[in-house]
Image (cartoon, rainbow, N blue to C red; front, side):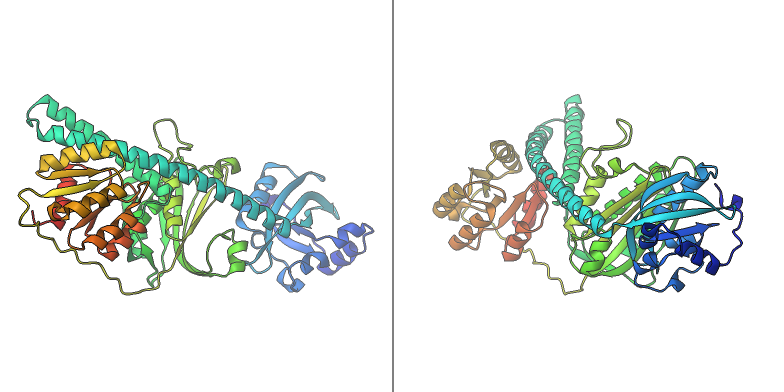
Amino acid sequence: MHEKNIPSVKMSSKRFQLTFDNMHLFQMVRSPVIIFQDYVLLYANPAFIGSFDTSDDNFNAKPVKELFNERGYIQIKNWLDKNEFKAGINLLADIQITADGRKFRWFNGNFVMSLWDGQPVIACYLLDIEEKKRNIAVEQQLRQAQKMESIGRLAGGIAHDMNNTLGAILGFASVLQSETKEDTPSYQDIEQIILASNRGKDLMLNLMGFARRGKYRREYFSLSGIIEEVITLLKRSISKKIKISSKVPDFPIDVHGDPTQIHHAIMNICINSVDSIEGKGAVYIELSSETYSENKAVTSGFDDIETGEYAVVTVKDTGCGMELDTVQKVFEPFFTTKPLGQGSGLGLPMVYGTVKNHGGAVMIESLKGIGTVVTILLPVAETVNETTPSLTPRKTPSDVPKPTILLVDDEEMIRFATKRVLEKIGYKVIPASDGKEAIRIFATQKNQISAIILDLMMPVMDGEETYSKIRDISDEVPVLISSGFAKEDKAEKLLNAGADGFIQKPYDMKTLKETLRKILDY
């Protein structure tokens, strides 16, 4: 039933109201009821108007498009377009309605094709379900948060263990490569092992991003610049049949965190939008800022965020859209709607982890055959002066003929592989399997030890406690913090406390050599 095919109803609104209010169906009068024709509201009964605590002036001849939220309007329009008018045909739908275009309220609606004086109208009988929807949403978000937290812990554990495995492979491969002539087939084979290991490393970094371990830098940056970069890159690589448009404010909106991770997150969402468009379509990117009170956060579906000002990045597309069941799974690692071999299923999980790690939130809304809207919230930065600890290379003790590294790591294969790498570089190595053993060795041999490579995640005594006890013994020996996770939280705390550097596992010979040279005069 198309808009242009609906004949006009020629009656006064006063006559219509008097007739309808005097109907004997008491329940219909007591419950919210609206009637529209030609996609314009003809009548709203007192119960409906009372649901919004406003006057009927706000609903007088109101266009239906302004009455319902976008998703609801499309649903109604699709129903009318697909059905020839016939009295009695109905649509049952949960739908959001607004009086002012800002605050929406949930109703369960029964839309019925009806005749009035021989003219077609749509009568809608409503049931207010705002409280029910809010409770359901809170329960769903709690279950989803618990599920994602569990999957995140699992993903972080898998990534940590895999990084140790890749670290051993990279270490031994680096040593073998250094002992092999470049013009031999063996050298090329080892090169491929290193390349494959680095690809595995990138995969694990994405997995750790989902596990909220993916922020490598902390700085202030403008989201406007990030979005402009994303759009520039997209326009160079996508079909000209897909239109990219944006709306970015003139004033800067700054956030605090890792610009590279945020760039990847927004780019990933945009690429998904482009991939969802078959042939001709559009992707729209908007940046704005909004202040979220506790009430606004709940009504907007972001009830897990802190109150305050947020940068809002919205990516909307006219692609194929998704069913609700699919939308509920898109943040799970390795889940993908793309054909086998065309997606790892780690793109959106990485987006989820990155945004959460920056104190924000992400929401996806989608309709099959209509398109998808992704909304990202990121806390607006409060500018403060940043201080970066200065790293001054420390001289190797003059009485040590060969620099000696105390290598502290609970993983045997990492100790073995790193020991081989360090020896190949030219260091002497004393391995320790945990913090207690490291303290015992350091207490008796501190004058022979040139530097310490200290793993953060260890049983018996973790890296943080071990570092503290090392500094109780001596504050002269440089300490290099090592972890499979990103440089944040404990690592940053130790760097601020005086640790001399950080190296993320897995690393190869070149990376380790360069990092040690930054903290040692050797």
